[in-house]
Image 1 (cartoon, rainbow, N blue to C red):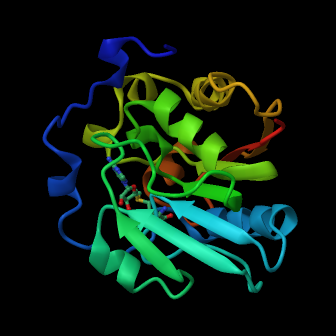
Image 2: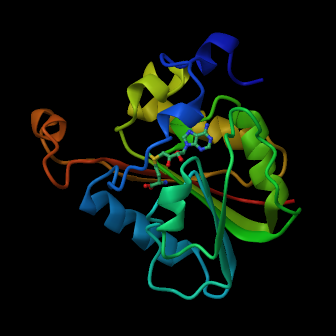
Length: 214
Ligand SMILES: C[S@@+](CC[C@H](N)C(=O)[O-])C[C@H]1O[C@@H](n2cnc3c(N)ncnc32)[C@H](O)[C@@H]1O
């Protein structure tokens, strides 16, 4: 196990279903972050393939590309119902039930945007990501420095931006059969106080990308 029990704790330890019960039709990161993410997706995803957008909402940040199927997942059905990119979706709390109701080797890509910090059992969830990916399939985990602080696990809250990259790399490393992750970083050039004020272009961008190698 890569996390100690205390590192999995959230300040708000009520069931996550409660926190996400009401829809939030917002974007959680700024336009520059979203553009960088869409560019990564354009580069790494292939047309007419099967995508699993896990921990999704009403937006998937996918490029204008035709996919064979986009499966969505999250905790709020209203948000997912409004997402125009999803062909189908399901609601499931990964901290209660990490096993995905999806077949083995069924997806070419798994994407997870600004949500990995809420996963309490990443070993189990990343094992599921591996299981549902086809050999050669890609997993793209992106994040910034924003979060619902009370819902992020302690290992994330207490970490630096650099240590969070290492944490996500260790999640991949906990499952045999992933390639060595590639890390894509666009640090903010904005002074810290402007980032904190939410100035546009201020959100740092991180993506950790790994392939199912076996
Ligand atoms: C900050 S939002 C990001 C949503 C979306 N990926 C985006 O880019 O806008 C975090 C998402 O993680 C999902 N989430 C949080 N905790 C979860 C849990 N325990 N199980 C499943 N999904 C969860 C919620 O549905 C929520 O939409």
